[in-house]
Length: 496
Image (cartoon, rainbow, N blue to C red):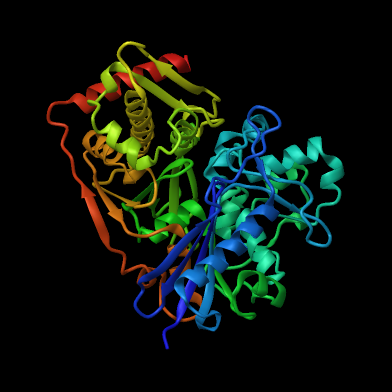
């Protein structure tokens, strides 16, 4: 009888779930829930919150739907893997209850807190120990709670990341990983421990930090009640967890120096792996412990993040397109418009603070719109080009750090499904783009097989990934590069 592995990807838009056959390594079934994007609470400009309980409720529905569609029985599922939206903050009280809505990754209220900490502690210390500025990450968000909601902080037992919360709901165990702590920017890479100096600076008690477990390990067993809610068997181990971008890289078999993964979901990300601590002196690129990082064999994931990516394109679909228009319809319309969208340009940074722009909240901008010339199709293409150009702008920063690659691996479930988008990036960068038939949920499922002995290594678990499509374009006429340079000039004027 075949054995199966299940994986969940807890995004800010939806919950994805996947089943993988442990023996063949083939993806058996993938589903997601809800059908429409989960809402984000924004009481003030720059704020972004979600209820953790909503993640759990939707994950349970996705799990039951997955089992129903696949026909796989719960007793044949041997392990659980979790991928999750990075940098979020979940606060737990004495009885593991959630004390307030989660402050999620796209929330920018911690920007000034992180900036002040960076100035007070000094660039040298922060870069040497954290590889980053404290920035707008998890610990800075917790400091905001301490300063602005002391009554909440006083009830706090532990603070955790979104994936840690989901694992807690499954197992009753509160724990996290080195990779997770590093994404919250409170891991001390120099001393290989929690960054006590940063906790002390913020006035945060060390006891509030969750216990650390290995990324690939038995992290707790599924309890009876949550097993019933999920449709799974009690006792099934949770044996892997990682933030969505390290996990996306894992899903694409990106583990080693020189390998690059990218994704174009709600946010856009380029993720390059190196084998030594490295940092960007302006903190536009962030370094985190990759899933296979160890102190004796470092693996650092350099993460370039663009907030204004898929969120912009989904906004256009929702607010600008006709009812019933699909992304496939938009792609057909876009393909009829020439490169550079006949002069219409879109700056896509309308989803909060942008790290590659020194945490500026620039907003989205429409440039050179002509009412008698430009249609919806022009708007769609200009938006896609603007997102692609923001990727290229960020990759130029990576290049300045000595990070170059000839190949970028991407999943086939986001903006890279668009031929226009992928061709634009390939043409300007000269990189071959390999589109892989996988998802983050499937990668998490496969990775969960390592700790239970189904595979010897994570590389073995993901060795079966297949290339579905390749974009390998040459900008012979220079029209893509020319369009990018005009867009880049627009951006630099806005940054003055």
